[in-house]
Length: 78
Image 1 (cartoon, rainbow, N blue to C red):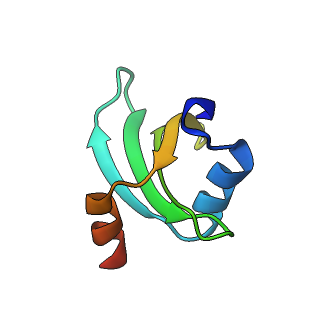
Image 2: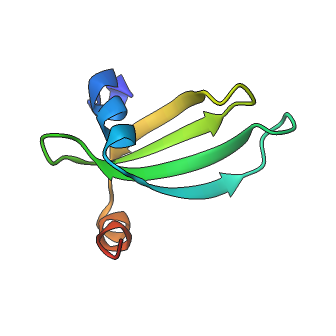
């Protein structure tokens, strides 16, 4: 995340601000899959967050970055 200049607080805000979720692929372990969350921070920054949804109902953040133009268009159709 830090490589893309995204801080942990911004990732939390995305999850709290009603993001759009998309299934990406099955995980290596049963019940743990890779998802994508498209959302905004409290300051209005548009972020893409990749995360593993774990069996214990916790998200393990893989990476987070600014949305591409294509992703922003999909998000705008919300």
